[in-house]
Image 1 (cartoon, rainbow over the protein chains, first blue to last red):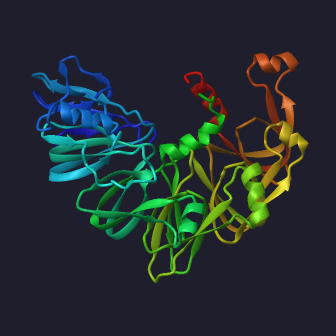
Image 2: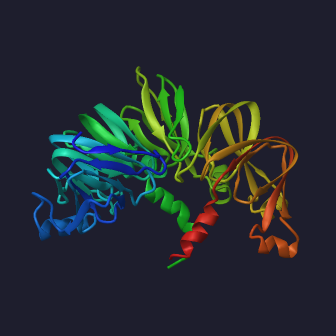
Image 3: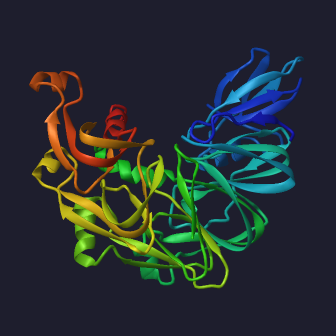
Length: 227
Length: 219
């Protein structure tokens, strides 16, 4: 693992406890830092190595990620960094070795220096079921840390598997997918509350979140004050 | 059928394995992942009239989904409720049990969901005009907002409104002021529910109305 990261307090209040080697750098979304040792130096930038400048940063903003990325560099004795999440839930990581991981916009937390984040991934172009979801693609060599609303569990797809789109946290780019109806007929799908779901095909891993914020939000909204 | 409740208590969800020929019933939108070969059909939650009453007065969905394995291999799916929290399984052996509004998540086909008039006392206690009754044979999976605590009650027990998840059909719910007229409101407790009877009740450690009142302060 490029980044030494541990996830205490799973799955309800997960945080990322990161130990940086002397001089090691990690890039994290703005606002994720809970605490850090005093010898870590933090700089804010719109860009990330190989991630382009302002244009890519605007792309990230549209995708729901923070406009600014924070670069944390450890001093000569290394250092400790605690990162938290905006979602109430879990965190997990994946080690990339040149391949890509597609992550739900808003779930990205941090990554190694040599991983680039691209917000222009258009794979779900015809996403009707949930317009507020955007996706980022992480490519490169290193660790990617992401969070979720709910607990994270993984499914190794070998063949076909259906996942409700609101529950996808991340998936390996090698998987192909289609948006499809959940039931045997359109009426079944809409009445059954599932609507459009994502059918993954091929071989690869999908990270799933146990709950989804839109269903939770809908259950809260009758009790919330009108705007 | 093999059902495991995972990620308890904060984000509990059901991991279900269906053998060939088996079916599990779940409320609408409960499915988060499923094998592509499973058949999902939507049906009225106990018939049209019952379904409508359960939706408008029982907080349940009008439709339920039947997930059936019509292949020759074991298939899996995961089911979850909308609010994060704990889930529990109750095995019914012909008897009935009352569940609070919105608590039902999934059940075996042998379990029926019905409603019964709960009485005005229950309505004033803000536990609803109708009770949701599950009866029959099989497992019923229900969830809560927060953690779930089981309690054996002998005689009487006081539960703050919004924290009751399940109770025996023989129990009576009555509203009660927590202190005197003034004390109830200064203490912040207001009305509470007095549960009278013998048997098991389930409580949830959090309360959706309290959470939304807190959120409202920031809106």
